[in-house]
Length: 620
Image (cartoon, rainbow, N blue to C red; front, side):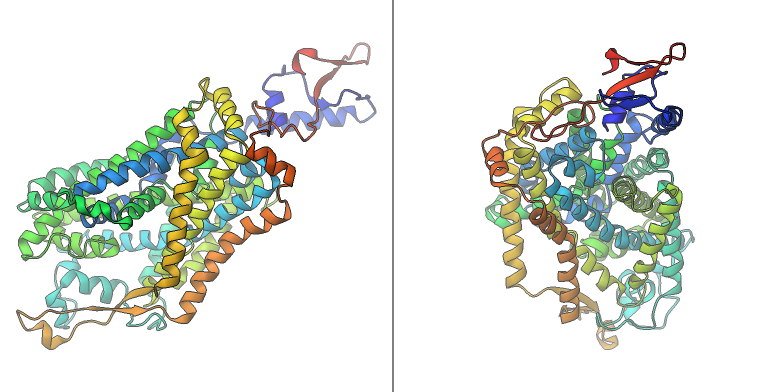
């Protein structure tokens, strides 16, 4: 980074960095040749094509499947319109400040999640490694969800999609709930127990998983160059789909009841701590905080860039999208309740919302094939934009920070990484695949993410120091860090996340985790018009599943502990952190802590006429 900073201020004929006591020797020609090669490499380094690509990539990363199938359910089940109060508060005190921290740290230190945090203090290298582990787990299972979406996307190309009828089976249970039966029995080929993998991997899901990884690879293989170009379509097209679904949804009978159900305020629920925790959790996961991708994305931006405005824009667009998607989805769910005489929010969560409730409603509309294709193509783009953003954020620290792949081309490195993740992802294709996928969703990307963000806020607000952070922001943007953000970063955000982490720890010890197993229905019950029919049962996780979940949490968090102990802060350093006495050389390239003696570089050139070496004072 010092080299890059120096080169940006030097004349073109300067070719070598030397110390002040440099003496020219017989190797000067080789040195100059090597320096010129390095200059060319730096000129051709990665970077966003323009500011729009960066913003779209960040929006695509943040706006994902959770905005469509998790937020509407939380809004409806936690007080309706009243839930927007804790949701908005958590956005202001948790979401915005932490997104601001990650973008600012990445842009200032010009590196991935490992290098950027390590430059603040060596003990924080484990924080970057923790981000790498969490992103790896997310990349492994998230593509399987995209494969499921592709399955429905291809089926929806038919004028009469298979999930709208039961012509493919003689099972009476299908007649009772066509879309639920199709999801579990046909797509997943679900088994009744997590320990039972049925007939092994389903070949259709394996093929679609390969296809999903291929699309992801094509969006990432050239680094941010390909990611930025892919973001133009992947991040914008879902909004076109949402607008189409909005105008179709609000014109359906029962749409008003669905939207009313979504926003009907129940202020009594605000007295429950669970509602506030749900709001904080949704903000945290929806903005993709703690994965390291935002740090990596910001590192490719020019040093002089208004990161304050960027973070606010991305966060507000993400949360606004959640609300708009909720209106679209619940308008359609209101129509579903109208035609089935059921409840609006029934099955309205996660895969049950997407592949059962919405699929049933869309299958009953005029023009089923078109609106089904629009809906699932929107989900596909949402999933792909989040996936390639996370993978790009993962490749940056592995390739640039750790040099894990040596001098190999980035295209080859991304291909190898994708292949490894693809092979691991095959565990989601047998009959128990969805149950195992939920382990990946519930363990390594929940508690470890909270640990990451707590450490990040402490690192930025205390170890780096909010005063140094403020100076760095001032140097990059020309304006100081807003006072509100400084208070949140140093005090409010870490306190809130520690409270949330404590609640999750207590809950994990006091409750036994459950999963929903598909056991099909009793055919005799399905024939009775007034009989309640159940296709699923709640079961406790087997011991091996709990051990696997705990192991995934452990390997995510352990780097923070190991490096925190190995390169721990000294007593004097801790005192300096508490009393805000740590000082850094603020400037482009990310200055070292003043306690460490920096190397002073000067520029030198050789005069071919007299053979002497002259120091270029203007480029010191």
